Image (tube, rainbow, N blue to C red; front, top):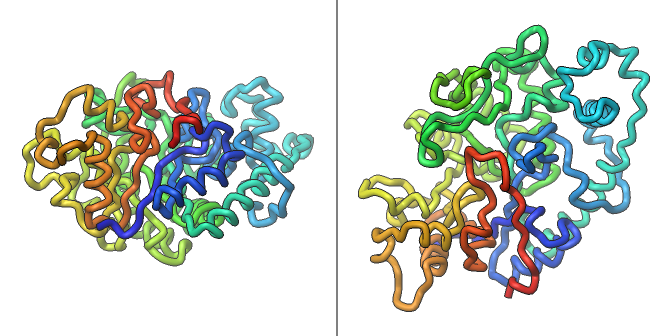
Length: 405
């Protein structure tokens, strides 16, 4: 039996965003769960994706507002974000690398002319504090999501060009993604920039430590998306249309992971996304630091590999088990698309496929079982959150309170 149970639901899937947070926390408790996991709450890109954000630190203040709070803890990143946001608006959304040189290259006299206002970020943090306090009062832990990479057109890359693999004009020669895998036969070209790990090492991992500290101010736990990027990252020529011609670049491995755990205070607040084609060296890196990995039940029934780590009988206590993730189809949609006959021996008479998968997750020895709200509601493909490798039509799904019985 999993030690804890939670629900995966992004804030944007709530009918009224953060206005509905307390009501949703009550639902989590009524469901018998004690965890609410969400996707990144940073501003999304032009396609609505929170995994290619213009900031690794800022909140998407459109999610909600309340009384303003003291923002002194956010000094490392806040002014750069406010400058970036204000200048970008001044130039009608133009990316920073196309700004006039005095702004692109952060000439002090040019930046001194820009008037900024931290009000909306402070207002968001006021609302977030209310949500945190209510969740704590109900015994509900909040789990965030940390994309390992940030967008090229971001406040972080603009303010810290030396920490990323860019040329003298601020342009990348290679970008991040993943090779061909379960999700895409051509791989995925994310377009996010890659880190200059030597530069991060020379500054004592300050940017990463500040990012971890920010996550710990926002959440009780968080998931590191694409954890294998700390071991090695798939570098794709920026001019290529797909991800097939990339190559692996070495990452900082234990050195950075150790620094991050020290900031968090313990290893128990970190979940690592270790899905896809994962070499044993990445698993060993995770296990050396006693970090939980992920198992996804939808990956368990497509082959006869008895060592498949997603099969119910192979799930271990050092994993968090999901029926599916934001990148999967809903469980009902997955089943209707192609009924996996290997699942049938696990099904009990009278159970729907969603009920079976939820039971398998909750009954597993995993440290935690997380169920997407779409699977609890037994919704089909129309409720899917994202189709990897596609740029349009994702991240838009919302539920209706009337349908959440």
